[in-house]
Image (cartoon, rainbow, N blue to C red; front, side, top):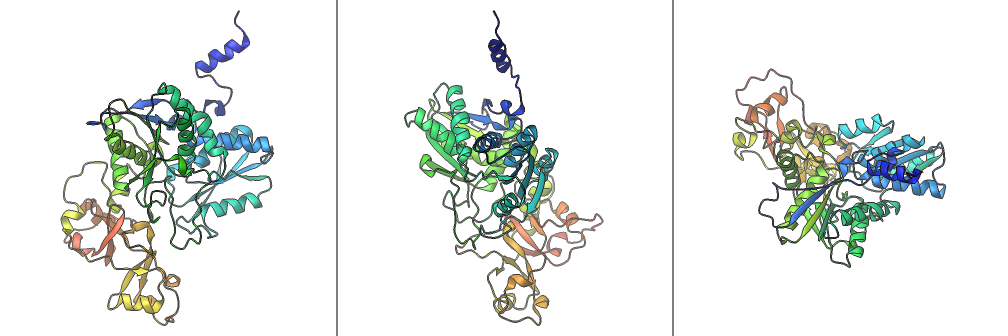
Length: 480
């Protein structure tokens, strides 16, 4: 006799669910075959973009909402509030919509336009706040979200960074899935560290069930604090830990359990983006920026492993959410990142041939007296965040310019940040010279020269436009 329970079991096996929440999880492992050339170990990528909301964050979103409902913190008719780079917000908005909740999501201004559009499509109210603020600043993403949750009647702050339901989601779903999918043969788990929930939860489970034989590897942007960087800005979204130099106290997320992690691989933006391009072209996998960090780390680690090792790397989301960034030469080129499409003709690097001036700038903590001295006989200089450690200046940390004319009549003791004017446009060394010339039509004077997302010099537009006739209106590339 066929029972009701049997029918339900058969339906689940065939992928038939009662709600969108039930469809979260059980994502596939896909073996990498081309980018692993010369690697003896087997490398699988877990495709989390196949969750209904398009990312690994669906798991944490469901877990946090269920926990809040059980505790009474989220009641019928309530409002879900979260500060996020996008993916957690999408997962929360999707689940909230199916349960009758309103959603308000706060995102930093560097969030891709695709993610913001997706949030709004799910019915979320999106608040955009300036990124790169110190953690005590009222405009810091999580501070804005916390304030809104208090102000909105029935508001509940998901708080993924410190919510124990975040790593618990991966301890109860992601980790067991990977163990079962590899028949317990996994030797290494690799995942990016953002909130730390995925790596801590899944990694903790796999270490426990394997008796400690599974190695857990964190993938981190080069400058992220998790891996020992000084926290200066990078360009791959949704991974790492940024630290503003004015941060009073650097609080790490409670969702991140560093004792679980055996090693951390630091990955540059260029390595991550180049990996994304190879995955799309050679493996047919269009993945998001944090996946580029994770897969690059997995490939690096796998090169030192043997044929019996099995590496599983978690790919949090799809490249469809970043088509305007990592796969768009109009975004890559002005920042000096590797282009996605081949180009003919000279690049800015070919044209300038290192004939540009050093990138001199005024530190953000300077007084007007110090700024005047640094400007000297020049008309102006860029202003950038001041950091205690020396190193390259990310384009994202250039606040603007300060001009000699703009300082006229002001007191020497005033802070330079009170007189910052809009930043100079940027040209990238990888950008075709013709494209840069068209884009900068109408601009005169200096531009910032960028290489791999960092400022390497200043050049006059005439240094690379020469006699070219500019007839197409261009756009200035200012914000990353």
